[in-house]
Image (tube, rainbow, N blue to C red; front, top):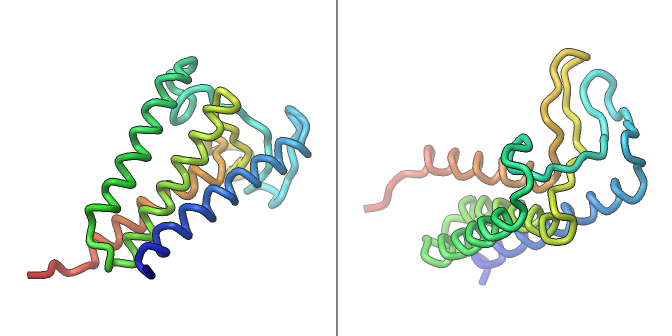
Length: 155
């Protein structure tokens, strides 16, 4: 049971934090409004992505919904067929699942993904806006990679 919770809790909490953060920002921040959190580094800006990563292939919402659903099913299957004793792997898969589900929610209800985190270095370099779900996916994949590199193989 404990091992299942290390997958389910990050997944459920991640989706809740993602959906709530988008709701707060998109209900409080006007279109084109920018809120500076850390000058020269971090802003809140409302942005919508109708494509996939960095806005590539816009206008294919139905296809992205299907692909996202397939990804979620694949993540759950990977978890179900994996060695559930590795807590870090369970958490990592839960985070990736949360991110995929959070962005799927947006695609279904808003026909695109709502982004708002604007990371930049001064006035010269701006990373494309992203959201909590995107962060969860990246953190989960990073955790999986680190876990894979530093976990010894069992005989």
